[in-house]
Length: 329
View (cartoon, rainbow, N blue to C red):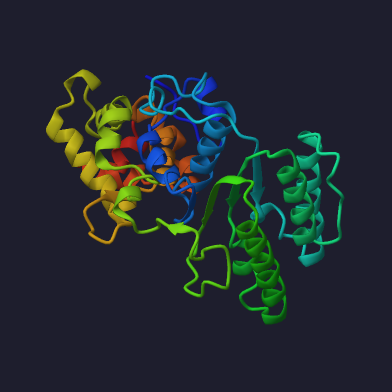
């Protein structure tokens, strides 16, 4: 049984041989408009999704996309990828945000060897300098922005600071619309702002947050769990029922998935309501917390209780008494 990793790095996931729930068919559709925006709550794998997209655009399908849906279908050339995670830049205030974004843009220009790039005082002017240098050499790039709304969410109760960040993001957004060097633009965050002047989502960016084609792109469907986590499901039932894994039945697997759905499933992100997904973070925490046996679980229960684990509730749903587990010798 493959190990289940809790990571935001696609390369790390593939290099370690851990479970990867293949979302590349949805990624292929996501990239077709070339400029896309998607919002999802925390814990739904947005950062891993963007890292997967960035890896695809940077490296192509080899070696990280072997045995995935997209491997024999992706024919695009490789692109330099500018990655910006605004959650990393806004923790120390506005000036630090400006400084760190400028630093990231300068580092990217240096990595590409852009002699024409001239550092400036603001992120907007740095971005203009970068794009002009790229246009001169006719270089196309991809831009990946994670947690685009982090500076705004962090300052909702500070109107003046909120407005400074909003103006800065709007400036960056307008600049990105004005140059042709961006081949792909992917933006993700927690919130969707209806005001198109507030952030990056504008008329030239396709908002796929509630599009049926992207309903399952971030999150695990029930079929994903059946396909990629069969061994973990069997182990959970085995621990819950006190039976060997080879005796687990399909009915028992579905009963466990029903119980799991009550704790971390039933989310829907499409307008038709046809696709329901489980929270990946909650599911992975649950599967990683399953012990090898009931007695192992009893000895570690006090530790697992601090990890927001739903195993106790699922064991109750399977008719197992926790007091019996704790007193098991």
